[in-house]
Length: 274
Length: 309
Image (cartoon, rainbow over all chains, first blue to last red; front, side):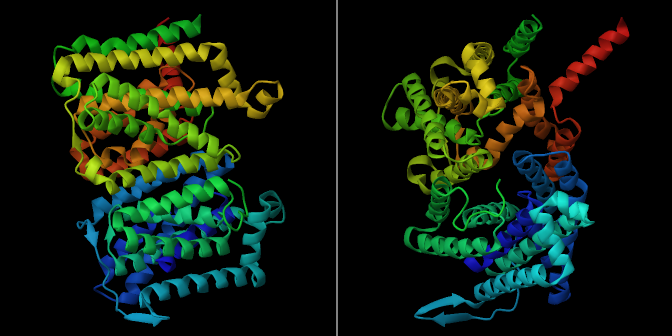
């Protein structure tokens, strides 16, 4: 569970870490990409995933460029972004309902069975999701250290005014970050849709879960987000096993609320403050 | 004086639906529904916009009032009115505990904690479905059994007017002025020697009680409640009421409630595209009219009056 959760969490962390904007529409956009992937799956698996992820990148890019960056430049605060991105989520959930005739889909990707470790067996797909998340995280960190693009991301997230002064196209950096975040959420939705199923409203669950897990890890802190996703995934699995499915999310949200009360900046601390 | 006229006209507008009380039917049913949400909208107007408290758990306080009334009345045999008032008295506990627990945190973290509570609560209702009915919900005849539907409609309208008057009056008192000061600059208010803790606690208590009583009235009017009615989107719709309507004017929440409840009703013929239109209209209003609808409607009327002169 933690492996799948880690992808939208990474998406939230990348967007928030660079743009400073809490984007609640990310889950709905990711699930929209999941439905697009499902639609093209009968042609070719690779092509379908590429189209789904590509569509999400473009949506993330456009939403940031057309709506969120201009509002940010006008001085919008976190509450305003919270409301605006919820409204963006409404639009994409509405598009899902209008475009796709089925309310419930399952993405039939090739199975790789279960992997046994220390007496426990885990679905191989969950391990792949986790490895993918760790791989993405390492690539992001390496890019930040060794490439011009990555350095411009770091500069923008640390000091926006200075980044603008030294000629970094911050608007473009924000748009790319938003695109990458939404693409990661889409990959998370594809894994989710393959293991369970995707419903029209799944995006909200994925988005809210992604956001709260990111907050628990220390919003904007991608290592914190990954650790938090693993812990929360385990909490969900164990509580579901011990108390049943209905109590799974109740326990999760109770723990998150407690963490927020005790350590509002998350377990590893936030790189930005909300 | 201008403020006084605005208050009187707000109350006057709110009383208008009493004119078609005998007509009954769909219009009356929807009006009652709009007013029940308007009560919650005024709570958000008072607590978030006027007192500056970043609370997003309106659906939770409303649900405590509603479920509490059913549990106390049906399961414990309490009289309906007693059950309504006791559950309403219990509703502020959530806000107050949350406030006390997050006292060290700032702004958006507090908003997030209460928002998570709004996500958690319907799930808790589902988990406790043996008592609450979960998604299948609970039916409740309540006051309707004694006074009839039309009288209940009048009670809803009158209570909404009373709630509006209470908040309008409160914002004109010394307490209201201190709350406005807190919302504008919390630290400065503390620095001039005002015990902000006491005033914030008072704001949460008043808002929670009125929201809880509104929830109790809601379940009496609709005769049914389930976890779907108190989903996290309910809290968002409630917050949208003063935000869209405009929080700077007293009649802002009235326009907001009409917008938030009636737009979905008007979009029923295009139900398939409902969320797209709703989301887009919403974004447009927030981006193009950041002050909300009310100040712009006021400007429009002034311009029309000027042109006539």
